[in-house]
Length: 100
Image (cartoon, rainbow, N blue to C red; front, side):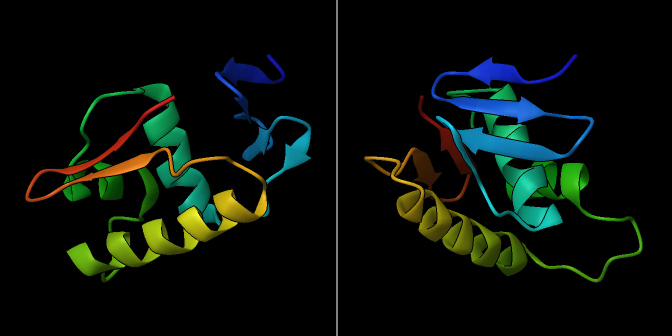
């Protein structure tokens, strides 16, 4: 398998890693789960519940704002990695989508 390209991003599912260009992104497991889910369905709006289903343990005590917080830190890391524009779009009342 190895790295699977998604636009300028690439995902290594076995290693739970994502890179932008040649730069490996320093992601927490939750940030990885969120970005991976968004990259696998570019343009699709994923609700907070759908994103949590992909990244959180069933026993985790989480709320909608938890996703918002992780999206915020993820956006910061994407900026630091040199992503030219924020690819994560907020759709109020619906969820998030990634534009490649």
